[in-house]
Length: 415
Image (cartoon, rainbow, N blue to C red):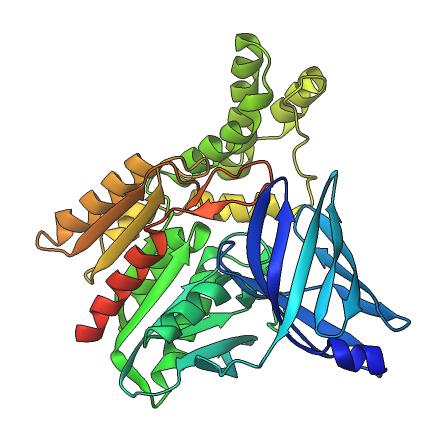
C-alpha cells in the first residue's frame, strides 16, 4: 500500500522511441477497490487528454507495470519507482522505447468539469460539460462523434483547449458507449442527429452559457451529420465541419475503402479487381443490391493481397450503410444559414477534401449568397490533421491546425 501511495499524483516526463521524444503528463490516483490505482495521460502532440491506462500495478516497493490498450495496439510499460522519479521501458508491438517521469506539484485546474445527463426520447445520454473558470454569457460548442464506438474522451483535448480560451464545451458518450444508454449500432442517422440536438438543448439550460452563441463541431461522420443537426435546431449559431463529406455517401465509402487497400494491390489488374469488389460491396450496403454477386466475387478474389472479407450479414454495417446511403449532405448544408468553418487535410484518405469543400461551400452560398463560409485545407495533413509520422510512429499536428480552429471559434465571442 505504501508504494501505491507513493505512485499517486501528477507526473511529467517523456516517452522516447526510434530517436524521437514526446512530452507526456500522467495523472495517477487511487482506483476502485483497496490497493487499486487509476492512471490517465495527456499529450499535446497527440492531441489527447485524460486517456486511461487499462491497468496499473505495483509489486514490492518499486516495480511498476502499466498497460495501455489502443484501438490497434497494446503498450506495456515496466519501470522502477525511486523517490519522486519513475523510469523504465515500454513495448508496443515490435517496437520498444523508454520513459522517464518526475513527480510534479499539483497544477491548478484551467477549467471546471461537471458530469451532465440529457435525453433523446427514452435514451439517456451522459457527458461532461467543460467550462472556463470564470465568466458568464459564454460561447459554447457541442462535439458530435465520428463513426464507431466513440466516447467523450475523443473530443476532450479540443474541449479543454476551448475552455482555456474562454469557450465552454459539451462532450458526450455516443449512445451505447461509456455511460450513455441505447446502442449506436442500431441507431439511424435521425437518432444520432437528434442526440446532437438534445445536447444543444442541454446547453441552453446552463446559466453561464450564452444561448445565442452555441455552435457544433463534428469530425468525419459527425461533420457529415452536422448540417442536419444545425438545420433542425434553432439554437445553433455556428458550425464546424471537420473532414465533413461533401460528396454522395456511397462515393465517400468507395474513396475511403479503396485508399486503404490500393497500397496492397501488386498489379494494375489487382487494382482494377479491387475496385470491382469494392463497388459491389458498396452497392450491396448502400443500395440494397442482392449479396450473390458480392459473395461470388469474394470467392474468386479471396487470395488477392488486398482482399478483405465483407462484414457478416448480421453486422450493423449493412443497416447503417443503407440509412446513410439515403442521406444527402449537400441538401442539408444548403439549409445552414449560420457561419461555417470547413477544415480538411490535403492528404485525407477518408474524405475527398478539395471536392467536399467546394461542394459544401457551393451548396451554402447558392441558398445564402452572402453566407459566411471559411475553408481551410492543411497541406500534407491526413484525415485527423496530422502529418506523416517518423520511425517512432508518433505523428505531429499540422502547425496551424489548432490556432486556426481556436481563432475562428474565439471570433464567435463577439457575437
